Amino acid sequence: MIIMGLINPAFCIAGLCALVFIEGGVALSLRGFSGMKQERYSILNHFVSEGGDRRFAPHKTLFAIALIVGGVMFAPFTIGIALILPRIPAILIGVDGVFCSVSCCLVGIFPEDKEKMHFSVAACFFVGMGVLLLLLVVTYFFGLLGMFPAWVIVPSLVTLVLFVAFIVDTLSIPKWELDLTNRPWDSDPEHRPNGRPRFWRNPFLEWCSFIALAVWLAIIVAICF
Image (cartoon, rainbow, N blue to C red; front, side, top):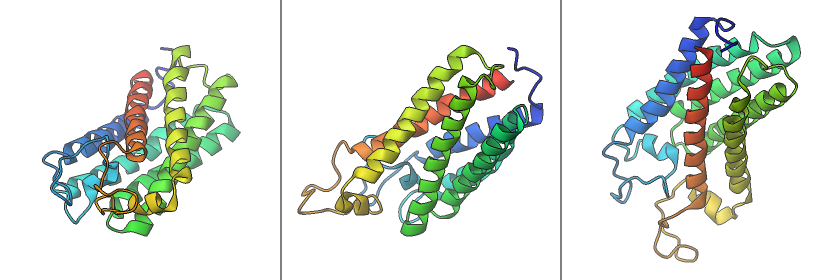
């Protein structure tokens, strides 16, 4: 790959650590999950952050550590990519990368049981990542990321579309459903007489975004190495 040698190996290692901690740590934290109603975990109707809820998640500490450490590692990785770019896109991508890093750490510090703060920092992370992906895609189309292979635009665009889909879906859901995202185990006699549905689009889209981010990050890290 042409990109090999352009990015300092330390930045590449930071990206690998971010991938392992954020994605791997979150996945491991869901082992033996038993929710508020003793239900098994499913990506079809559970939010990612439920794995870190201090009221019932069995591996909530692992979940928090994974996001905090992974978030810290994500900043130098994006800075490493920014350093091979011209000044303006470098500043935009570097600053937004640090913003995503801090937001990720804060999601680990403020778990789901701290409802308002958690929702705010989680929103910052998803919006920040959406902007970062958009900046990278635009930078690529302007030929400033020509050291990456042409096919890398495909996973980048797929991940961007899924992030946008999740953000748009979250903004468009009715207030009663938005309130329920903070306490998804609560039964709502008017709208959900049977409690949590077997398939819930909003948390499923969140998981689609999270998985796509894992694949995208793995591809970018592999190319940089």
